[in-house]
Length: 243
Image 1 (cartoon, rainbow, N blue to C red):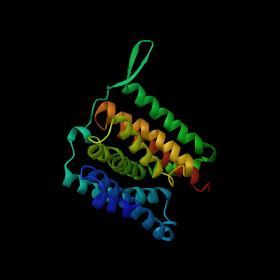
Image 2: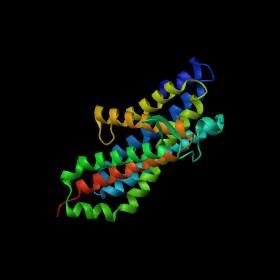
Image 3: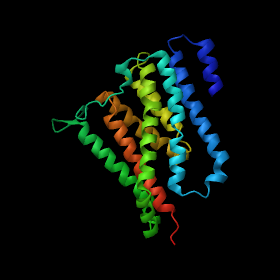
Image 4: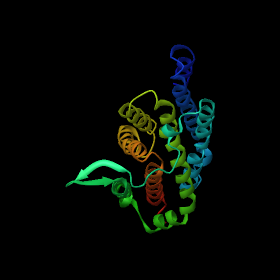
């Protein structure tokens, strides 16, 4: 995929498309490196606490973030398209109930609550006192992992792509592109496989709409961080030794 993206950007397509291809190349390269490094280091990481492994893997996403930022420095995307600002918490969602307009405070809060409850429900059957205690004791560590992961992934999968692809395609196509890319790259995520792709892709649509409506990162980053916290908490609490 990396080779095809590079060859295409260099030879076949108009230079207006090249920044998008190079942004995709940078993120794919960084994520591929993390995957390979994680596989190679698995024998070393196997004895680490789950929270420490979570921080190590997600902290490494600084690499694709830096590579992608280098591409953006070269091409300087439109600041309006990239939306690297807080944005409007009360932005209109475009929905209404009984004639009353619904803004993103209700949409964001509802989505965050559903995602948290749904994630924790998948592992609650495996929870025990020792697991819950461990999850609470490692809270600062996986909070740091969630901050890095939410920041890196929102920049890689949405803001950076929006910045270089926004002038080239319509709103619907851009949301479809970023959501599909987000879903496919989570094929080995939590959960993994086709279910992981579909759930991540659907969540990606909500996050992409949040940027589109708020023109900032206030809701997409917050929701991504909240989902990561629920995932990491559930993973640690459900896999801790019962003794």
